[in-house]
Amino acid sequence: GAAAAAVTGAGPLRSISADEIDRALDYPALIAALDDAFRADIVVPARHHHTIARGSKDPAVKTADATLLIMPAWHGDAGGFIGCKLATIFPDNARLGKPSLYGQYLLLSGATGEPLAVLDGRVLTAWRTGAASALAARYLARPDAAHLVMIGAGALAPHLVRAHAAVRPIKRVTLWNRSRARAVATAFALAAGGIETEVTDDLAAAVREADIVSCATLATEPVLKGAWLKAGTHVDLVGSFTPRMREADDRVLTRARLFVDTRGALKEAGDLTGPLRRKVIAPADIRGDLSELCRGTVKGRRNAREITLFKS
Image 1 (cartoon, rainbow, N blue to C red):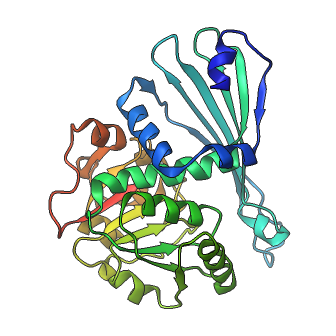
Image 2 (image 1 turned 90 degrees about the vertical axis):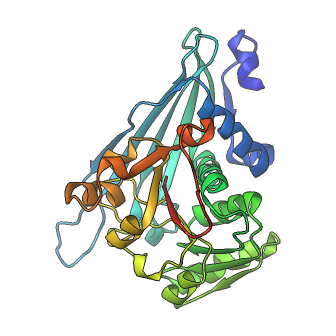
């Protein structure tokens, strides 16, 4: 509403904080808004991702490179909006007690190009990511999906759990993380919000019982194995956003019907780029994107036994 008012020149540039975003949003409304947006005339160019070398010159010290992400989008009609998110990913920030992701979102008038608002990009990203995965699950997960396995206990995990619970009757949440202490802390925070969560050290056993598996890590080697998936599972791959990152092995991809957030994932996400390059899968194996699912131009889940996969 503030942004819409600013289009007419009413008011200065707004700065919208993380707390304001958290207070304003809820998952049912945001998922519905995203559903509408993916049906609308919105242009989403391929985002830019740039590797920033941050490796240590000392071979005994393992450090990870950083990533700069630039993500533009705009309404096709002149009366809409233009937006661009600028984000950084520094995987080693956990050692400093800082988030791995920082970002800002700049909202502009689609009629004049003038800036309207700057929003906290880190929290906005978490909300949008959770909502997109839940929107995909609404078309791809079984209607009776009740057991969610969450792989990864970072900042996105609580959002993904709450978002999936907004679209499916989730009664059981199992959380796995490389660091058990981080998993316990995240599970405690979810429980405080009313979602009872169990922590497991046996990921394979948990996945074998899952109806939905959501994976949000910074892994560069697969942590999810296709051999573990039971018939009817929906897989939600979130973490891989560069060709060097990977969360799922080839067997996950060959067992599933594949869908993507946008087609840019075929060039950006290591979960797809590697298997495509090695011809494990072909471009034609990508059955649709979120826009096509929302518009009904492609079929989502067809039966209770097929395995589906959404790459965010």
